[in-house]
Image (cartoon, rainbow, N blue to C red; front, side):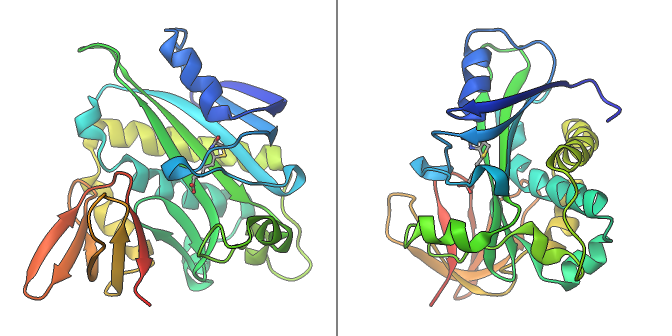
Amino acid sequence: MTWNCILERVAETKSTNDDLLARWRAGELIDPVARIAQKQTAGKGRAGRSWLANPEDSLCFSLAYPFRRNPAELSGLSLLVGLAVIAGIAGALEIPQSNLHQQGLRLKWPNDLLLNNAKLGGILIEGGQTKVGAPTWMIIGVGINLRNSAAIQTRLKNKNSLGVTSLDQLLPNGKTLPETELLWLKLLESFGQHLQEFDQKGFDVYRQQWMHWDAFQDTEVCITGSGNNPIIGIATGVDASGALLLLQENKTITIHAGDVSLRAKS
Ligand code: BTN
């Protein structure tokens, strides 16, 4: 790790995202802080869901990061974080990204990590700007299943339409995962590089790269949760802001990340 980030390790907390959000709201954040918990008792997922993880079998952390951009200019952040996670995994496992891609690692818009269409990890981003001109603090929460995906799947039972998988599935036979601490530090190193460049240049420079990892490129998908009827179309990639491009008959519409979820149309 070469960038300036405070590291905090706790055995147990309700949610690392909530811990850092509370500090942001209290105006206590000055430098970036990364907080990892062995166990979360009230881990949060997107759209009000809970995040279930077995303490020994998962990596759960949050990073509070101050952006110079205002919140409206951070629209592609969740996609960028997916790319940062992939680069961090490649570094930690010492497996080239091309090999990870070949093995079926993908990103699902806007912010899920999939391995052969099963959920490997998730990203939850919260935060904002307290006043004009102040940095925009974003709390980036990451949960990755490391091993024993069957145990996680059992606890989830129907709560998630996707199957669940784990990081150890990417390893060659006989190899074991590195220590969670090393994995975390590799991810943070990658976050430091990606977030700094994103703050300077925005999402557009990462657009093609994101589309390379897109799990649903040219697939018929269904978008739900926006409060309206489900939206169906062919996913054709993302635009310069990270919005999903959906082809419907002969027109393309854009879907902005919010409380929407995407699944392949059955
Ligand atoms: C999702 O896929 O719904 C997002 C899951 C995000 C889980 C992580 S674990 C660390 C951080 N703390 C939380 O309470 N949630 C995020």
